[in-house]
Image (cartoon, rainbow, N blue to C red; front, top):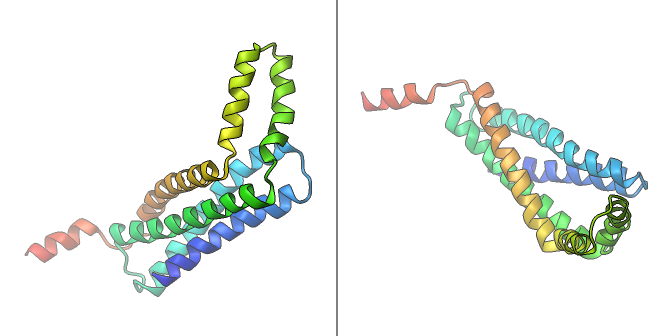
Length: 175
């Protein structure tokens, strides 16, 4: 369990470093940050899960892994990744960049006005944007996004790295 938790935390830290230091602190434009910060965590999560699951296969299961064990390893890793990254996002939006919603609005409102949206539509969008960048909503959203993506990747990777057939084991135990 310790190995899987370490990989989960490690993946979260790498994602936070890539999104935080390389993008936010160097002042790269908002449009690039948004597209990259949605794409980079997926790639890092997939690579980290593969690496963590293969390492778990070697260290814990002695290279003898069925699908259930593989998916369990992936789920534990992605759960701790989602939890850590959610907490880091919460702390970031609560203490580090409290005015991030205002930065987004400074870009979004002129764009909506240029598209000739009605004032009540703009007001609704402003409220939605402010709500989406509340720290608790960032924690929830990040946790769910990383967990769902991690479950999908875990299932795919589990099918690729397993070395035993789960159903053969169950049949042998019954006999």
